[in-house]
Image (cartoon, rainbow, N blue to C red):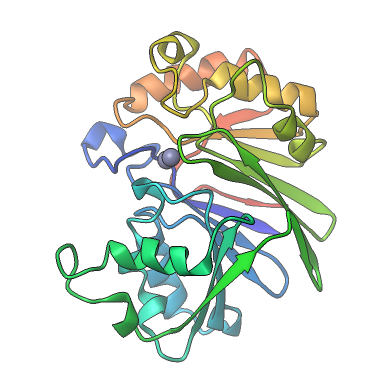
Amino acid sequence: MKIKFYGTRGSIPVCEKDFQKYGGNTTCLYVRMNNRIIIIDAGTGIRSLGKELIDSEDSIYNEIYLAFSHFHWDHIQGFPFFLPAYDISRKLIISALGKNVESLDLKTILGGQMKQEYFPIPMEQMGAKIEFLKVESQEYSGPDFHVKTTEHNHPGKAHSYRIESEGKSVVFCTDIEHTNGIDGRIIEIARDADILIHDAQYTPAELEDKRNWGHSSYSQAIEVAKRANVKKLILTHHDPDHNDQFLDEMEQECKDLFEDVCLARELMEFEL
Ligand SMILES: [Zn+2]
Ligand SMILES: [Zn+2]
């Protein structure tokens, strides 16, 4: 299994030069398994991923699974710029999680930002075969992978994912606000994972002023990692006001608290 970060920024893309080390694009994670790829979230980072996929001869990219943590703008705004969606030879399977989510809603959510008031090409004219998949179960399996999900607290709700394949496990948990202590569902889904990717938009001090904004501090992410016994912790959804120097210092503080931790950088990749 391979994972690669195409977007690590939270809330809104940033392009200033002192933000380039950790990256300015909003959330997009690429996960490659033996016979399948899954993309989680379509923040602005999905644009460069799309360009790579479209240039590749690899037939694995003919069928692309796109899943979402949730549908806040920073997690969907790259979708209209995802080139494989304009290629008639490709199939996109876009999944929505949860019993109450209608696949029609998903079409409205993604297509809504492509209405003529906002974007020149409507979603129906993109070209690729787009299938909307409503996933009601919290777990689903393919021939060589297993995905577990859990809902977590965020304004409008969001979902965490655990993807297991080839005996390895990656957990993706962003846009989470822990209330009344650490959310036990996250400890459970992250249990013994090889990699936990966790929201760490704030420092513990900043979190005090950002209650109900839907995010975590790095110390909460570390607490999850410790209690869930994960091997490696990667912190993401960097605040758009945190420049490289700030994040360098934050990473150093985290390293004093957890053995194997780093802040996600755009285009950082890991083989498991
Ligand atoms: Zn977000
Ligand atoms: Zn959000």
